Amino acid sequence: MSMTGRMTAAATIAAALIGSLAFFLATMGLGIGLVLANAAVSPNLVWFPLPLLALLVGITAAAEWRFRIGLRTEARLNPQPQARSRASITAMTLGIALVGVAACVLQGALASMTLAAETGPAGTSRLFQFSYAVLLSVTPAVLAEVAFRGLLQSRLEPLWGPWPAILLITAINTAAHRWGPDLAAQWLGYFVALAGLGWLRSVTGSLWPPLLAHTLTNLAIALALWHFGPFAQGGIGDLGRIALVALLGGGFLVARIGMQPKTGSPRSGHSGTS
Image (cartoon, rainbow, N blue to C red; front, side):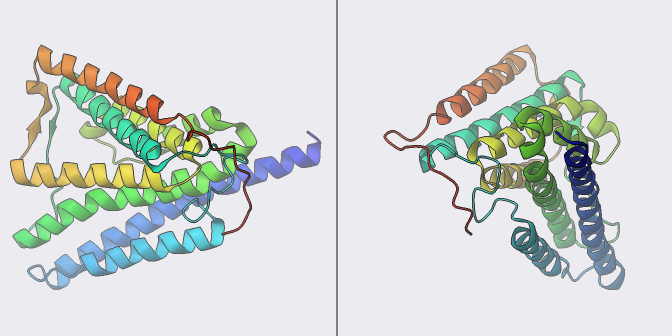
């Protein structure tokens, strides 16, 4: 690569890194601002979910329209993606979701961690607290997929190849979590889960599978914690930990089986159209 080419690639990488982080932090900050404004003005009247959801939909649509992050087309990750059935993509998505959950719970068990629902501002109603617990689990998932697997991976992977790009993005995404005891107790589980989402993005060429896997997993966990209360992972015994290892392996196996291309379908070229 010529000096000019290297400089252009470096500029692209720097712009992608700075832009994706700025997007994630700024949009997350806007979401928190809506929550705090609602709590300050009307703590018993919950209205922040509507503008927050509108913000998520709007910012995701704008990113797709402007940068082609992989929602409408197969973007730029696979010039010749293998045709796969919807069932195989679903299997890969479910497999990666299982791997992520099992890895996080297993590390949390080893660290004797207790996982609890997100807690909203003090003095707000129960409905406010529920809305906060759910949406403040879903919002970071959506923004992380748009910023890191959408904006950043679609720029870095064509330059570096899949795994160097996936590992760097996974490290950045892991570090972008809220720092504290939870991250210290589950960072490796997060890393495994997020690397799986990056792999899913690369293999399918689409942002939809990792977006759905991340968002729906976070939603299910938030609802379970709200309904059943805190989850004392440290109380999981040896048999439970063995079961988690088996679940981890099973998730990998399901995802690997789902990788098989659609029978009888040739490799299709990317048309470059939306």
